[in-house]
Length: 283
Image (tube, rainbow, N blue to C red):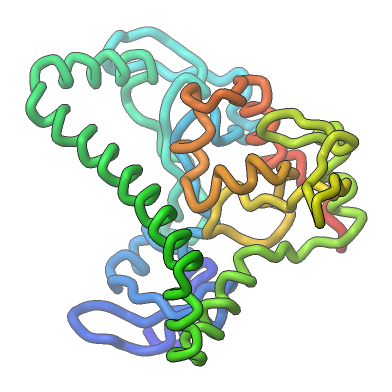
């Protein structure tokens, strides 16, 4: 399979144990290991930079599904396609195809709730794992802060200059968006020149510099931290929201538990990411 292309992935060489070394078009200098079967059946077509979600609020359906109905296997009711969870995969012709679940969202939620009631031990274990993951992320963040303050971080940099340089380059790449000034201007205007997460207006966006307030531009925020650097993964964010989101997954951070969350802002973000950004792309 060497040099074959699967979506955005290009196969470089065989690693062993059914795995192949590939590179994604978004990061041609970063090698990733993927099972050959996942490449051949279309389950893996990128490194995660174009990750799709099955939640209704995260993906906008193509117009061909507007007004179309599907029968739920569980309740037997005829509902619109938007009322079903679905996955997007590559078919045999390597074209994206929508695979809708047999049961509607309402029935799946009822089934999940009932499963939680019938299996309290497993439900507790699963939620405990989620909590531990979040606590681990916050702990690492605090640990990194302490390392910078007590000088251990700088000592590691002095001892490992090559690793520090590579890490800095990778981190810099994840922070830079490859968009034009006019595309960035259109992105901000789409969100009314305000933070997409909390609604803070750019006229009120300040930072403290040398003891004085300094007006600054909004940040070019990656909705998906490991996603692309193009306009399809860019939204404006204030410094506070940009810092708080950090490396958290979008759905894990921006939800009902976030004090700045509103369904209206979430819908607008998803509409921009999935469809409307295309109107402002430059050739």
